[in-house]
Length: 287
Image 1 (tube, rainbow, N blue to C red):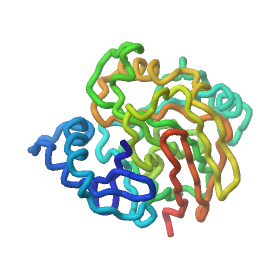
Image 2: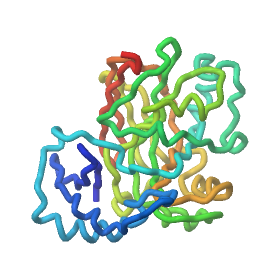
Image 3: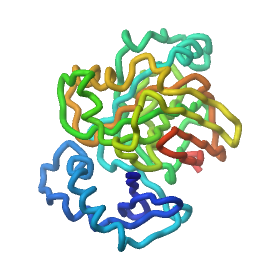
Image 4: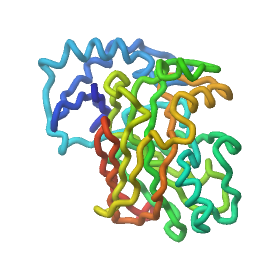
């Protein structure tokens, strides 16, 4: 099932080139009072929501996909976890290109570990990327994003995929410079996730998905998730050995080689096999 959030926080299911409105399925989520939980309520109750969606689908109203404004499929992740330099060829290009490393040592992921991005950086594809520091290089990085389904700590790799609710495409946008990754990658709109959530049952093997990214029709990134240095099950185990994972947490798995700069007025097209394609416009944050 392909589940999206769109327009004024409506819930939809993608069927071909249309969106079916199943917002009423959200009624199965229990009401909450302050203090609110530190996880996403939709993902925490996804099984119940899906059951309700199935009952609503036959009578759901439809709208052309081209006419909706796609939001991030997860509204309230407790945290956004990201894996740096998790493709060998990207590690090599990061070390070779001074425009990327800025005299910083680019260490292997096994040494540098994971990092967190601010949740305030999260947007959907229709919201686009707003370049905050146009005088600096701002790069695109396409990634497979796994959405955590249930809480877990010290998860074993062999059990890790049972903790995944589904998958989405991610753009880990990056301002280059000497600062720490978490700062340069946490600018508002620099975590684009979409175009929808594909539930885990529809992705037979997340370790064999083609990735592609074009800018204004020019091919930039091409890879397959089989090329990950640390695969998804091991990434989940790695992350959960440091902090508890919660429903709705987003795990960016790393970007392949071919990263490059974008500027205002560019359009990014990012595609992952089995998930779909999302188009993201780039603009100036200061306009």
